[in-house]
Image (cartoon, rainbow, N blue to C red):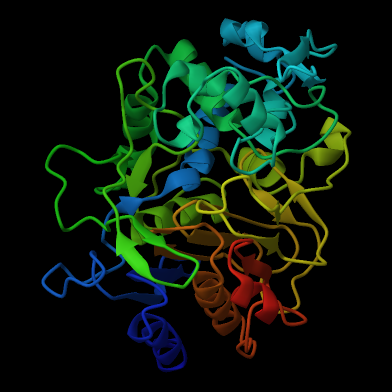
Length: 430
């Protein structure tokens, strides 16, 4: 497999299309199928450390699955139920209104929602929350009208970052947003620990994860993968981007962790083995929780349409995200932690697998049928960039013995798009 993948990954580095990147694939017993890093932690600085699967990086929304695991642990203890109204465990959500539109003067039209969001709504992104940079106009327009900083959900991590109004009645649709942050508030309120403390004690330590925790510790140096920016011409530049962690909300459940490809692969490995790590024997979830909640689509239980799942729409802030779709043409759902594919993927994972990603171009999948997990980790914006999508696609195809795609978006590709709406040359090529 290394002979097949090495030229593909190295070409992305040599052509300066991707800064540094690592990739890991493990089988169900924890045996390494593929594990390698490419490039340096700081683009353009050959003196910076070489990237490896043990190189720490911001994992952004890959945090969401770990927060979900934490909340599911509390559910197994009988401290929370999927059908509980969120306000039972996080009373502040009672203050959230529903955004119906805007007046002529630009002020928002708000009203009380007719439904109360449930814990299941948070797990499945069906509460009505939306990120301002993923949903054009509506949430961003609201924040601007209230003189609130934009993109604060992934920069400032202050309390007001999570109090945007619902954009639809809870439980009536899917929209990717700050639901996992509220799951984190629930974990903190029930456990009496900060989310970081809870995850360290109940997930990271039991699994022996040495490089997973609060983003950017004080001694962070060149060994971390620096976050980079890629402009519309494809030029990559290191940035000073770091996750702020003010005392008010130090651990937002949607994105606060740093980690490594190998650490995260071991979390996924535990899940495909029914909640118990196959090597250490550490258990973080019960088998039935993994089978019925982690790897089973919960959208039918919610009772809403799956429209929009896996779709990355044209964002309101294209410097942060491109547009496209995970697994185009495949029926998808959302579990209590993962996007599920409800059909076999022609060039990859079987039905019943789960996957997701992180904003800095991190992508993973977990296949409980064959007990295979895979992950690609890079560190640059915008999200859903076609060059790293091609690497993630190539990795999965190699694992399942499928031919390499010539480009993202060809028939049978595991991704489509990867196009930045401010990049005319990419639009023409897509």
